[in-house]
Length: 136
Image 1 (cartoon, rainbow, N blue to C red):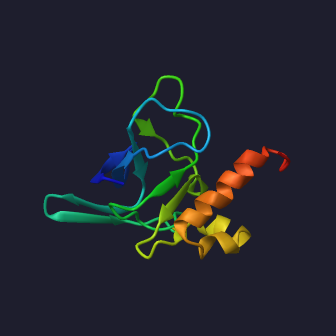
Image 2 (cartoon, one colour):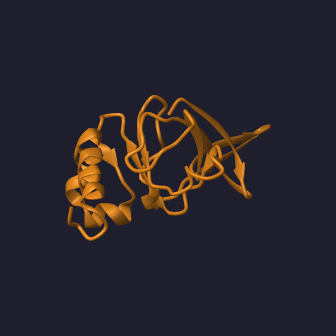
């Protein structure tokens, strides 16, 4: 994550983040960066402040940390905005280097939530390589 800006998307307050693409785990991309909007963060409007939280999302991302986004929208028209439809569509690297996943996913995958971010990415890569049915 290399940049952020507070604002609104479809009437919802939150943060727009710039994601510099390091690599894709599956598929290809011709862009070097994307934007992703998350409905969490602080938006200032003149003298007013809106603090938006959503307990379904893991944590608010920190600039300079990595994220893993599950999306099918990188192909085709190559839009700059990657839409996050569910909190499970993003894994965020915490300040301490561990992976933060959506609470719903954390209940199912407790080993992933306390792992270093890189180990979580390796775990996911292994399952992607195995295919949809879990067999190579």
